[in-house]
Structures are given as C-alpha cells and as structure tokens.
Image (cartoon, rainbow, N blue to C red; front, top):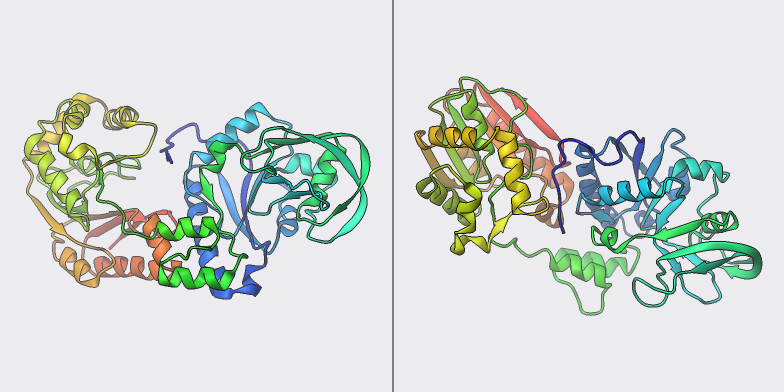
Length: 448
C-alpha cells in the first residue's frame, strides 16, 4: 500500500480535524495488557498524520464522549484502539470524498445483517462531519441495547464489499417500520436515515489503507499469540494477518528518501556526518560544508553494499536511467510515493535540478567515507558510532525509532527508552547535533 510525502497542498487543508482514539469495546476492562498494546498501535500510526494534516489527537473512553467534547471541530476521524491507518494516502481519499460530497454526514463500516436486529455502524472507524452531526441534533451513537421500536425505512446498494451484509451505501426512505434493534451505532443511523441521508461505506481504497485487530474478540488468545509471535489457525483473520507481519523485514534498500532531502536548518562548518544508508539526504550538508567525513551505518548489510556500489559506479548523472539498468538490485528497491518516476522528480526538485545534484555528488566522491554495520537499539553499536564523533558532528537517525517493525515487536515505552538512550549517549559528546523522529514520528533536533 502506497504512502506519500506531502510538502505542499496538504489534505483537509483549512478544516479543523480531530483524530479521536476511543476504547468503545472496553478492552481496558477485559484485558489491560492487550489494551495497552492496542492503544500503542493506534497512537503510533495516528501520530504520523500530524506531519500531513493540521489536526489534534485526542483520547476518549467511548464514541459519545468524543462527539460531545469537540464543538469547534469540522471533521472527526474516530478510531477504536487497534485500528491503524498504515498508508497516509487515506487522508487524501477522505479529502477527495469530502470535496465531492460536502454535505455528507458520515463514512463508516455500515453493516446490514438482514435479520431481526436491524443495522449496525461498527465502532472500528468512523469519519464524521461534525457540523452535520450538530445540525441533526447531536445524536448519540447507540449501544447494544435491544428494543423494539419504529425505525426508518431504507434502501441499500445491491453490491457488497464482501459477503451479503456490507453494502456500498444505505439511504433513508419515507416511512417507518416496527423493528427490533440490538447492534451498535443504531441510533446515529436512525437519525441519519430519518432525515433521508445517504451513508456511504468506506471505499475499497480506504479499506486497503488500514487494519482493525478486533481486540475484543478472544482477547486472551490474541494476547498469547502476540507474546509467542505466532498465530493459531482458528483465530480472527485480521489478528492472524497482523501477527504474520512480525517476521523480519525483507532485505530492501531505500534508493530515495521518504522525507524532505534538506535538513531543517543549515549545518555550517560540519566536520563529521553520521547517518543511515538511505537515499541522498546526506548530500544536503555539502551545500554548507566542504571536506565532511561521512560515517554510514545500517543493520541491513544490503543497504551498506548498495551505497558502496553507488559511490563506486555512479557518475552523478541520470540517476533514474542508472538504477533502471541495475538488474541485480532492482528487485529490492524500496520507495514511497506514486512510482519511481515521481520519486526522481521530487529528488531533482529538492536539490534544484540535475546539475546541482551532480555537483554535490562530485563533492561527496572527494570526501572520506566509512561504512559500518550498526543497530541503534543495541548499546554496543551506539558506543561504536559515538566514537566516530569528531569536531562538529551531525548524527542523523531518520525514523528508525518509528518503524512498523518496532511497534509490532515492542511496547511504545520500550522504544522510547531506546530512543532516549541514543540522545543521552550522543549528547554526552561535545558539539553534536542529533536529528530524527521520536517514537511518535515527531521530528526533533537535539544539540549538545
């Protein structure tokens, strides 16, 4: 699933947006350890959106509490703990939908079971137009209470996303019928359908951007499988899919960067640069400093071998043409954005064109370079890398403490401890600048 770097024209621009994280299924009471892990997952992925959308991230016990706490909000994206949006183009899809449907009420996972307990609006994720919600009288969500009452008639799409109960849309129609409700979200659906509103289900594109882990389903078994890092045959399919992703990431090389190629401020008179083997961001320091000593580290030996190969064989011109000819390497290229051509366009734009990139590469070829295998989660690696500090040093650790792999395997508190250890060790040296993301994907500068 694609991710994308947004420099300008951010999605949902001009709207007040809240990501509301809730524990609607009350997992905290059912299994506290699982609750903490699932909250970490949702918090970790949601925090990445703060660099893409002007938004707040708030935490609530349930959906009603969230809805009634954000009067000045235009759009609320409600997620139950364990829901994680792993592709940031999700907000672009939402933005496009809102532009095409400015009077929408909500997008959700609406379920038409076609039995004696009416419709359901699942709690896992809902995108709510808060202005429309207020216009409709601030309806409550509606829990699992069973009751027979007069409920609005509706029509629905013939098509389903899967099975028979996942319509593309439902729409209120004139008249009511005596029905028995008994599933979550019934009241907010009742209010919308009484007003004749059409409610769209999340599109397939939107669905493909996220995953919900159903922590309320057989919580103890799920927790035990997380600890064992091994699924069992008859567990929830989403849980099984997620646990299968715990395997070591494949040997891939980042031929382009997934963030801006420039550092947040000019680093002048730099003596030493220490950073990972990925993309070309390191060239930015050569705009302001000459004769920099480069120390490249990575736990992935293939990444080190790639940068060594690039330094030995590429002349600095027509990079796209060069990498397309590398049959031995092509199968492990890694990048985000639309495609490789889009990445090349961003690279040249960020460095001011082909000639400027060439000139910086020529400066780089004249610099002293050291390569070393290192893992920033290991104290021994940190101590080895810190010994390379010499003169004014920039230590760049990118998003190493905010990766999918780490949040699957560790609690957020453990990752925060590892991150803080890096800061402490390097700031104990003189004249060091550290730059990278903390475990919640916030870019930070530390300077000793």
